[in-house]
Length: 295
Image (cartoon, rainbow, N blue to C red; front, side, top):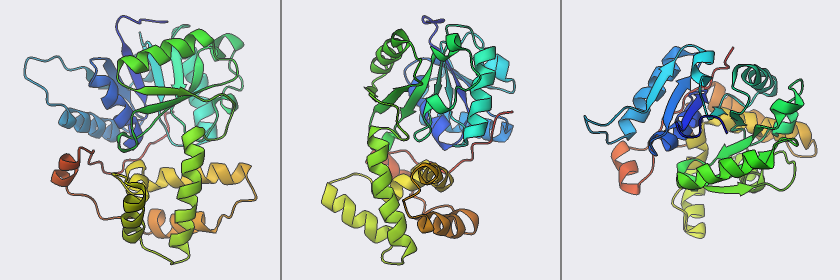
């Protein structure tokens, strides 16, 4: 694979998820370049990552931002796409990346709901061999990364990425079939969808839901906390993708969420956690960030 010794990783899209993925690599001494069409989002991501690092003055800084997409992917061993869950935007970006990146650079999409096989239309067969899904779980959900082939991904690429993920303390799991949503995400989607309906029906509050499920499942985080961590805009975008394919599922809860939490609400289900409380729990205190589409 390209530039394996430098361990240079490019993150495209610096919202809530992109910056978390970037932090994982920076913490394991990989050099990371951040790119976002919104420079303020990229700068905010850089400051957040630096705030999470207990960096000494004599330590090298392994993360930087750039305004230029071509500069971001230059000499990258791997490029990770982390923009919004928009099929057309992701298709356009992956097509651009396949042209800009070195021929042996791994290109991954962090999408948890859009299969990479749906994103490689128009990309050469040779380039498709280095493209795949690699979905990183939020820290609160554990160290798992689900991998899924685009249908043409080289086994060597999957093996190389699997080895790298293990080296940085992740637990790769390969999805064995082409799937909208991977193994855990399909299970989580069912739980999340039912909670969205409970809230839309007015049957319970986010606080009560989390309290009961954390106790019942002996979980560190509740499902509403996890949805806030991912970002409610992303939660809605992912649910919309499921509903388009699985038309038998009810859609009223999605409309309720968009109207009451994303468009006219606070953008959260629960009050923001105090940073000191998050540190005591070993979690990450994140505010939601948008993922503008790279042009």
